[in-house]
Image (cartoon, rainbow, N blue to C red):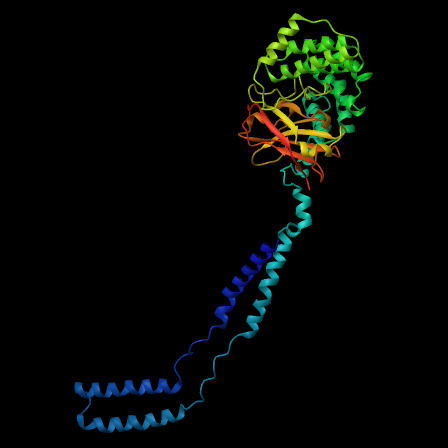
Length: 449
């Protein structure tokens, strides 16, 4: 802020110079004296006498007497016009002092009145921007957006799309209790929406330490009864049965999910890896699963596709393998405008995370507002993790991932579990990419100071 005050001081000095220099400049003579004026008159009268003589208006013999009379009158006038020397012109020091005080005081007072004095306070600037070196979004941007959406939804209790956005916003900003309440409200106003039920089950399981047993599983089964091919519900059902030790049932759900996702895509590879893990765990538990020819063909097709990144990610944890809002999202994604890739942790930072830490993956515009255009929330224990971001994961319909010319994808491991970056968090950034980019590789390799 020192630069600001230096510039302000220079401007005040310039204003003082413009006003005071003319006042301090020496003044010129105020005009001819009385003596000089009398001499000028006498010279003029002599010229008139000479002119009259030349024109014949005055006889030549009268010239000398007229000049003598003029000389006598001149002597009297010059003696009478004797005056003391003019005093030196004085400078207006009082006016100079007045402006020297008025200009700085008026300038500072005007700034304090209509300006923003807090903008020069480093603490206030830090509190306002709160943007760290990693380029994390400013807290006031996120909080203002969530607050505005919250206030709007108070008058629209039956707006399913709006409440879905609000619930996801609460979840993304670490407001777990409010997110759970919003999803509970959604389940009441949209009891036949499988996406609402699956998202509610996911959030409820997160609030219980990632435990899908009980009510979360009931919600998942209700979603599958409405839509047997709902991707997120199938993933949650496969996770719930796997956690319960029912390997055959879990395999059935994952096989159904493999048939739903695009063949040969990243999701198919992820599901294939999970299926192999289920089969491996079943064999280790002494409950080997019979081979399936159709499944073998599907897995072969999934593995034949080129990997999205130089280092293929090992299977992610089954729970929350699907991003929030899967299936039929409130904001439908634009085909071909999603961003996918892999997030991995630098080996040097492996000792700095714990399975209970929270993982955020979000995309923000390369320039302009830092508000996330799409965001995924999961656990640090899922690293390395494959991801896909699209419009269905946005926080507001006005800011769509597909509409941005270029975005930066950031991955952050939060110790506190909040959406605002804190000292000690681990971060990694991608290069600027366009919507539709595939194989984006992000390495979490920095610690927020």
